[in-house]
Length: 176
Image (cartoon, rainbow, N blue to C red; front, side, top):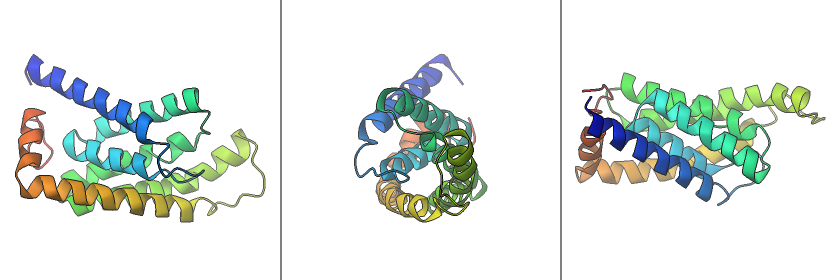
């Protein structure tokens, strides 16, 4: 990968992080942040699982520091971002699998991991291990639907492949 491509990937990731922080308050209620899932899936498809994980992690840290969001900003994003990229690659570029990875990773895994984090580390009482599952799944379905529509339109008009090539990722998610 040449230095121009590396720079382009860093700029794209920086823009996605900034966008994730800025649009996260839209439709947000505690335990549900649909716009974060849009960003996670888009990063997973455009950059890959590691970069999507890093992007979700940094967005979560910034949201926690600047907006006072609880650790749900991390537990509700990092697992879905990584699994979205993994399933996108494993499916050889199927957007629906990227969305499914976000739903499973965040809606189920992230929601279940959120219980001990919020109960033990954050001191929230009255929670069960399934407490966050409904809201996390609802958030991923909303954000995932938006991402699916956006990425499908980009795929149909050829822009998705063009963007991926410029970022050094082919349609299957492997680096050139």
